[in-house]
Length: 147
Image 1 (spheres, rainbow, N blue to C red):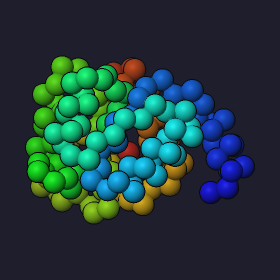
Image 2 (image 1 turned 180 degrees about the horizontal axis):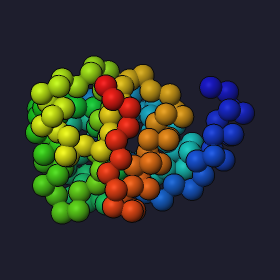
Image 3 (image 1 turned 180 degrees about the vertical axis):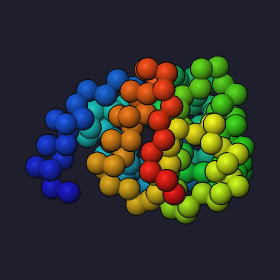
Image 4 (image 1 turned 90 degrees about the horizontal axis):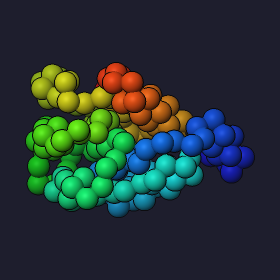
């Protein structure tokens, strides 16, 4: 993506109103996604494990969590359930390189707002984040692309 394309997209997605917590075991993925999100004006926090994410959530209020469910320690469902147990939990978007298995997806369906598959374009990520944040403001739960 060229700088001109990024500038055009920045204008389209200007002034987001909430922070994003990126939870992914890969330093490279977190760094790249955080850079993209910051380009679009988001304030970004990150964590590499479920426990580190819970620590961040105990100290900071975030608008949405973008979660890679294949984390060391806890599995995706355990992580999502831990997020859901928080007071006023933020919506969770699952972002994974592998499709979420049908059985696990069924158990997560009331706890997850949307699913995206890696690699994801910056545009698709921004559109999904925007819809999720708008849904949180209106109390709606929106679901995005299926995996």
